[in-house]
Length: 323
Image 1 (cartoon, one colour):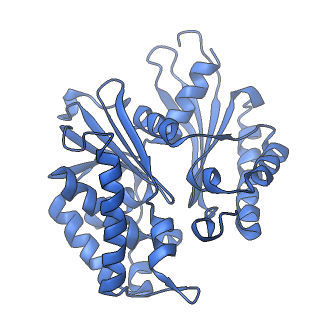
Image 2: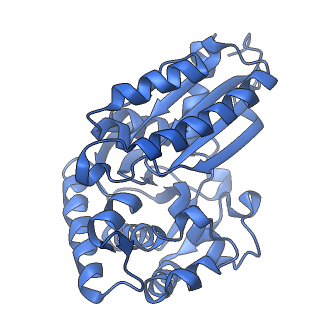
């Protein structure tokens, strides 16, 4: 990447959020320096698990975010050939994804790449591990776990991916499947509903374990909003602080305690947590349960939290493709 100059733009559109990273690659190290990083909760995957379709209101929320991001991309002078838009779980599952594709193309001038679960896993691994070294006391092989809204990716590797699997458990999917009654989230959830979520998680972990050695890693790395929110709660941060969260570590006992607290809380109590994003209040219970079961299943004493994930992997791929 020694001759590469100029910014690239990466957009990651998931089930719950849509995120933008505009970054300038360092021509010597090949690492990215952030110019602009944003996240909006749009809940694109609203109802997809039940209907198989992207809802009109979810599409409009997403298109509104795309229009905002298009302005930022133009302000930084990023040409269309250096923009990569990646769509993940909710869009893979939707029968009307062509409507989504046309809308994004009209707004941003690029066609979204609807990636497979395995490609999503590879990008997450690249973004999460590009900065990790033995100097941090973090040793390979890594198990990178990306807990999304509709799916969770498991990726095992050292410098490259050795095995990967995407399974259909995510904080939005499991919330809609087990914690919603008569159109409203049940608060606090009953023991029966929590048990149903855990059964789905355990079944998905069995699927992942058939392809990925979940107990073979020396370091568990956790990605995405569920993990970073739990990390913020563990540190009792007065507000969300990316710098404090990045590469922090959460013990199994902390995750167990925080999960129990979130399960016992109602909507208002979760919303009152200073570092809680309003778009995660309803789905954080399912997300925390996923994280806890993963740690128990893998035998991990702690999880290392990374703010760098699939979005950074997409940007790195865009930079390499532009050489």
